[in-house]
Image: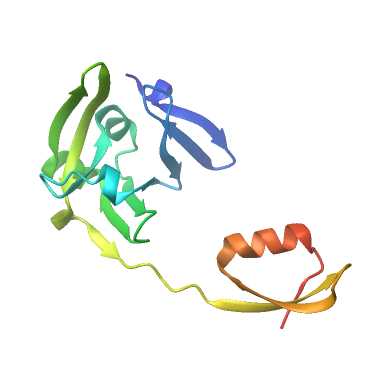
Length: 157
């Protein structure tokens, strides 16, 4: 598979990366490939390793950093493409008619792991048309985005 068919569409400076079967595998932005995965499903227990589709890995830029963010634990696992290429193990899994493509697995010993940061609590005053002025408490950027979509004139206190 060539680089152009692996790299999906581009949104601003971010490129969505898709596997052969069209599933979103991750995003490439500013020389960093990021994939969001569940440890309970995607961590290869036999090697205690994260895997990346072979075609995707070899389509990434040479000096690319690679990170996997666990949607379960919140941990972020970081390494480089070079580490994957030099120390990874190649496997090809098939379950009946399901082909999981050729993948490269890198044991956790080669990853730098960072724990999930506790989100800082922020307080805002909003004007609710039904409840009047009130204070709300939010955590993180996602909640902040939602707040400002619904209450564009919210004020941080």
